[in-house]
Image 1 (cartoon, helix red, strand yellow):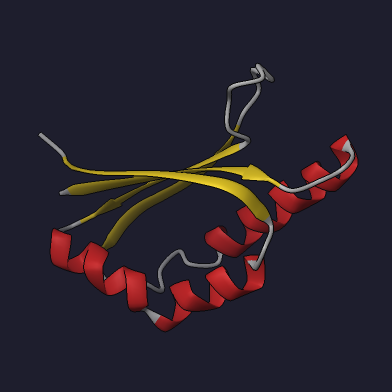
Image 2 (spheres, rainbow, N blue to C red; image 1 turned 45 degrees about the vertical axis):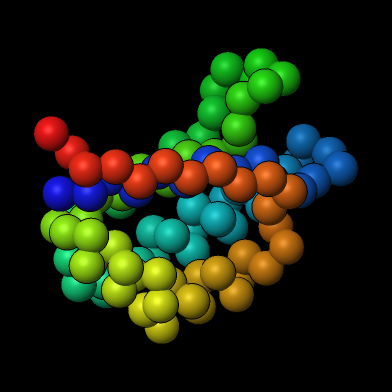
Length: 100
């Protein structure tokens, strides 16, 4: 199994704008449930620490194999989400690793 973790900082001049962007991101990724072959688990978490070095949002997902994760990258539903979110992010970090 491959774990795919992505963290973002979201654009927004005010706390309300940022919250709206985070909600939009959550809805978009939640729409992928049951639509991507090999996607075993998908979870979106929103930071509650509010420390200055924390990211705003994390996507935690599990794929049955590296091939399934590779296919996800170009799957039309994933590409739709990427387009929906457009320039919403101001920073992005990613880690993929083989689960023990």
